[in-house]
Image (cartoon, rainbow, N blue to C red; front, top):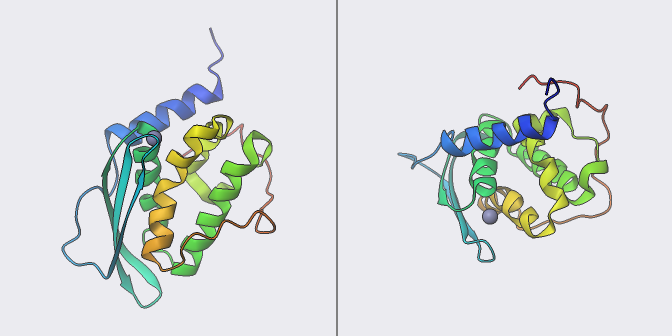
Length: 165
Ligand code: ZN
């Protein structure tokens, strides 16, 4: 088998984040936090953020649950750390769109490792697992749930041929 399906590479990336989560733990100082749960799967994600003006200076998560929910939290914190609040919300919207648009959507390159979760959109019951960390992010940033099915979709060139992280 010379050809490794991309989904296997993505699966490895998900497991890698699950086993070695980024930014896991508690922050010494934080300005906002949120705790969300997905009872269907038994997932829990708590995030803490240290905001400096409009910027996410530090972010950490803690939680338990399936590999998708915990890998998503790890990927999310790595992505939004040291970004502006508005950019973090934009990424949350782009990721939410990707999960709802399924495999036909072009994954936005700005999502980084989170693109590995696109295949999860095939399994409706697991979409909630993937979105949990961003629900926590939105809650912490005071955005609440803004599921906007119209607009906000970002189209970009497909990048499935790339295996860079
Ligand atoms: Zn789950």
